Image 1: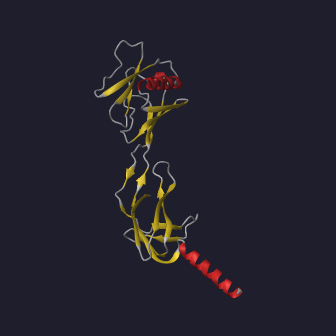
Image 2: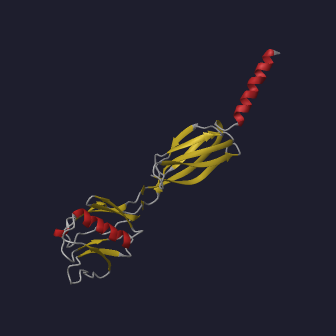
Length: 249
């Protein structure tokens, strides 16, 4: 009697185990992964180092370019002791006047320029002043023609070239890991890799619920994210295709 109970218990355990998802069955899950290379965009960053007022001439100017391209600027210096007009009136650009005196220090010239820019281009650029060095950050992604000192005596350089986010063409993702989770388990029970055409397959699976996981670049915040696909195998000897999954790298 005891021997029969032991055999019956083992049989029940075996049958119960086979009812859950996992290896040992006759079904399969397949799919394809395609990938797209992604690079983050950057804002144009310009740096201006100012001189003292005695090195600035009435009417001298430099140019600042907007990545959006709709409005471009020139910044010119107006000494009130001069009668003549300091504005060079550059066609296709908005002029931003900065009042100065020959007695102004390099720091005062920098401060006056920052104040004038903030009043004229608010919402397009952000400004940070460190003594006599003004850093100008574009608030939108994209490339723009570099700022230029033109006739001014200031030292102007591009600290960071702006560019837009870029995406390559979509292509089959070869040699990419695919993770298979059985039922409600927390870790992958099986791992495979895609072939040269981006295809993958998990064989010998039993009926039940499965989760497939794929690692992709997070194109918003950086780092990585996990893409999940859920699938239920309803029949033995069935071929279950999840279709195409796109990832970024």
